[in-house]
Amino acid sequence: MDVTLKIFRYNPEKDEKPHFDTFQVRAEPTDRILDILEYIKGHHDGTLSYRRSCAHGICGSDAMRINGRNYLACKVLVKDLGTDQITVEPLLGLPVLKDLIVDMDPFFEHYRSVLPYLINDEPEPEKERLQSPAQRERFDDTTKCILCAACTTSCPSFWANGKYVGPAAIVAAHRFIFDSRDRAAAQRLEILNDQFGVFRCHTIFNCTEACPREIQITKAIGEVKKAIMTGRVDYE
Ligand code: SF4
Ligand code: F3S
Ligand code: FES
Image 1 (cartoon, protein in one colour):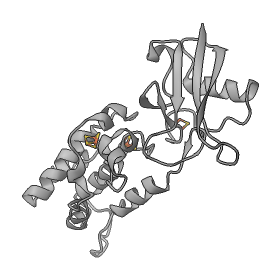
Image 2 (cartoon, helix red, strand yellow):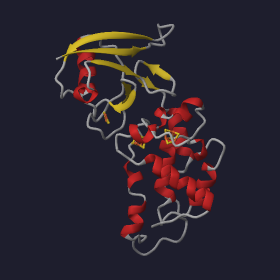
Image 3 (tube, protein in one colour):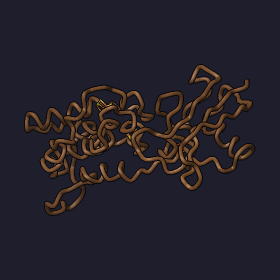
Image 4 (cartoon, helix red, strand yellow):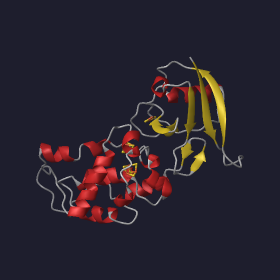
């Protein structure tokens, strides 16, 4: 089949403002959008810029906006889009550096702000810190995040104010808040109770729909809100 790709282009070294370039290429319905971008870069325009690494939905580097929705370009197939007219744009809400590449620094600043690592200063046990299967299950879903930013950059609250910590950072916080081995839940909940914290979420669900790992993000956010409101963290 023939597909038409309309791709957002911006080179800060020579363009005053962004524009779209259109490419017509042959594609199989089972081709991934990343395959088509690679073809265009290899055969039509070597200056086309985007991030990619693993090409298998693991590294999280090729999140972009495709036909108005965030996807990993390596995980979405032509046939998934249900059309031969495909528009590809950079993620919304982060500064565009070049073409489909956005500046991820603000995203990772939010991520770092929630202390996304295990904190426990108690004396080390002789063996491991024990945890029951139910306690491990409690935060299993939020361990799956690959930090692709598809969630945060699909959130209207984040678009309205980039100071909002955003769903990805809350997912990272959730992963440690509900870990029975961690001792910094109160500290993280205080950080997330800030004016740009978790209550900026108005339960819009775009984040959950965009997540390529199918993490129940809105549910996790609700659990963090509840922990703040009740002052209680349930580990099972
Ligand atoms: Fe990406 Fe999902 Fe993690 Fe958000 S929660 S950064 S969409 S993997
Ligand atoms: Fe935004 Fe997701 Fe909440 S889209 S408003 S963080 S449910
Ligand atoms: Fe690694 Fe798509 S290139 S997730």
